[in-house]
Length: 202
Image 1 (spheres, helix red, strand yellow):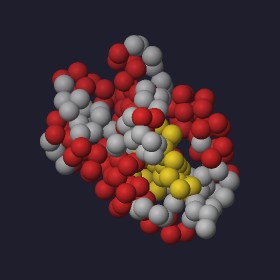
Image 2 (cartoon, helix red, strand yellow):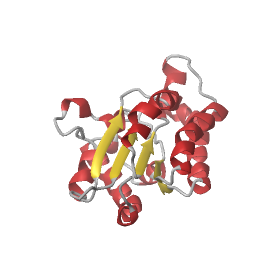
Image 3 (tube, rainbow, N blue to C red):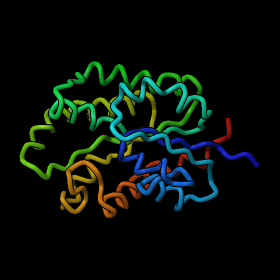
Image 4 (cartoon, one colour):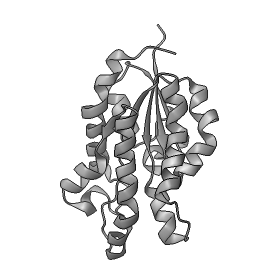
């Protein structure tokens, strides 16, 4: 029996060395989700470390649309902020929104179920507190897009920060520890897993 395809797109938090994994899932939250929901879908990980919304937009047709997914989960945005501070490359909120809409529009037009994960930052260094000024408008855009496109929103920034213990959850403030990864996977399962019951193969 053909199963629906569930595809995860994003940056290093989704990638998690998936290209070194024979199963292609990596060792992050995607792996935990596939284990929890084994047999319910065909799972595809298309995360690439370092990607921004612009990078996803450039590879969207080949890496995402070509897979004919029934559900796409997107986690992207921290690199749109990070590059401002480590290389001076600024992604304005308007550009961020335009890039993100370019990801969602072809999926929405085709009736694909959508899951948007808030990009997140758990400041562990003093300078990262300043990064919030750039990231928070982008998080707001993701929340607004989730409402507009009737996507499931996974409140990762909200919940991971509310959990406290930033260093324990993300030692560098960005990449989750095993404990942080467990929590991120649980948030996805709590909010998005119910969508699977209504999916059909495409």
